[in-house]
Image 1 (cartoon, rainbow, N blue to C red):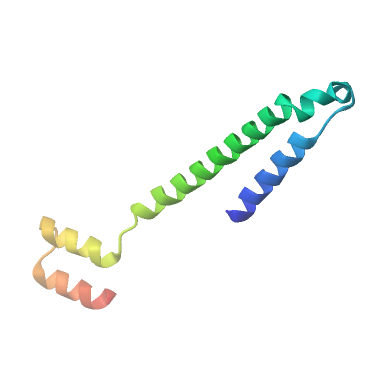
Image 2 (image 1 turned 90 degrees about the vertical axis):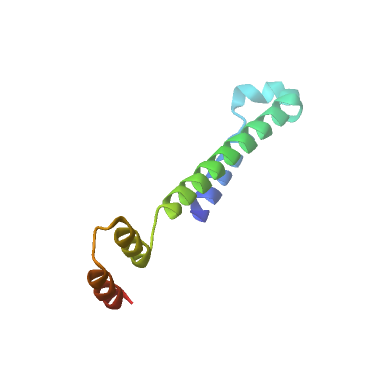
Amino acid sequence: MKKLLLFTFFLLLSVSCYSPGHMRDWGHMHYGFGGALTWLLVAAVVAVVIFLIVKGSKAGGESEETPLEILKKRYAKGEISKQEFEKIKKDIT
């Protein structure tokens, strides 16, 4: 995940610094407002990528339950008896 972030950052950095031949005539745009706009765009893209990665990792982590929690829920719902609960609890711990 960190490698992906670093790769994206350096890729965007290299693209933002690239100046094709026809743009060299517009040097003032590269260093003036055009350069600042490019950096803002790069920062926005990196921020969105980080946000999506963090959001994706949190969504996956919240839904995981331990086997004991699942067992307690099944017992609370009445799906299994006390004897089954105790036997399975003993097996998983």
